[in-house]
Length: 352
Ligand SMILES: NC(=O)c1ccc[n+]([C@@H]2O[C@H](COP(=O)([O-])OP(=O)(O)OC[C@H]3O[C@@H](n4cnc5c(N)ncnc54)[C@H](O)[C@@H]3O)[C@@H](O)[C@H]2O)c1
View 1 (cartoon, rainbow, N blue to C red):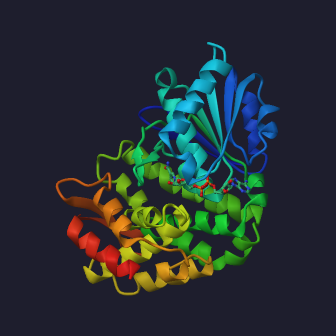
View 2: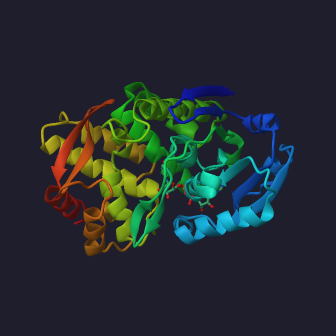
């Protein structure tokens, strides 16, 4: 089991990764409410807690990312727990991390949060860093808060039941870190893809821990995303979010980000930001993990007008421009400010 302690401005955030890391829960004192995906049995969590009160099951997936779900959670916590409630545990994939994190951040102006991610995507990304968001009017993460979890427990045993498809979705975010921040990680992903595909626990622990450290070093440098550093975690997401919206969220986050990364890398090469060959390398890595490189591979109907509308509504937009992270070479990135019209043309070209 590995442990990383991140000393953030708002809280000390501890991340534990490995088999049996759920046992860390026995250290928690005080009353705990558990919000879990209806697909995940909360019993292994509850039995390790000294005092569990409201246990709330919610349906996960992108439809769960609605403000009504957040308010429903808050009401259930309010009626089902005692005034002594100290902690909220969020148990599930990235969508549960988002809604439960949001609820934890607003109830009594903040209840201490423990994230227990159960998908690879949530272990390498959504469970850490303190951003949460729900969708509004078809636009991704339009409402949200910053609220850091005090503890993140990535117990690899949850991944045994994960589908191949959801494994690939998580790998899209791991590839995001390697392309922008960590060349050595790219080498590991090339060399060990068979072991990753076979869910080898030792290699899972390595890539999850390494992804967590990559993410938290960026968050430590720019916790509130206002210094132009944290945007690197958004690589592939500007185009990716528009693609998710264009399919009415039928295309998963990981697959949309995968196509978004290729599209944005192509632009980086065209602008001369990235050296030749970066996009090709990225595409080869994505195909090793059965991730799509273009929307033609998806077999899902895409509405171009909806994609363009979502892009124009991007929450990072300021004065008609979006600040974007683009890859420079493998493991290095650069920030570039782009007119929304350039991105609209790029999106149309990528969705042709
Ligand atoms: N807040 C952040 O920083 C951040 C970062 C990245 C992604 N996200 C968000 O995360 C979401 C995607 O996360 P996700 O891919 O985990 O989605 P998800 O929560 O919808 O989970 C994907 C699927 O896996 C299933 N599942 C969960 N745990 C399982 C397990 N152990 N075994 C088998 N099946 C399991 C779920 O029921 C669901 O069908 C998106 O909404 C994205 O915007 C947030």
